[in-house]
Length: 111
Image 1 (cartoon, rainbow, N blue to C red):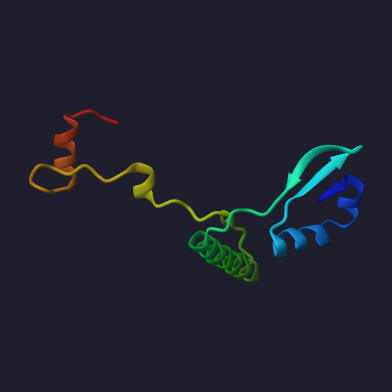
Image 2 (tube, helix red, strand yellow; image 1 turned 90 degrees about the vertical axis):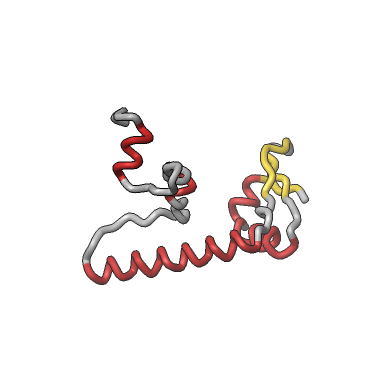
């Protein structure tokens, strides 16, 4: 389906609903020349549910903060776990991960 930019601007919600319900892609044209495609995102069932849970929790937190008169910022995406960012902590040959062992592994280097 091809849609002119003016028609898209005037009826955006109608086209978004159509894309969401049918999965059909819409080609957006400016002066009869294609410039963009409006299509649905790939459905990742587990990710979509987790994202929805996070967005619901975010809205709840923002609402509660507003009631209490507190200004907070909550990210729109779920933060990645620290282990995913930094990896697993170093483990000594005997399996310990306490700070002295970590200092021994570093060899006195200050990171």
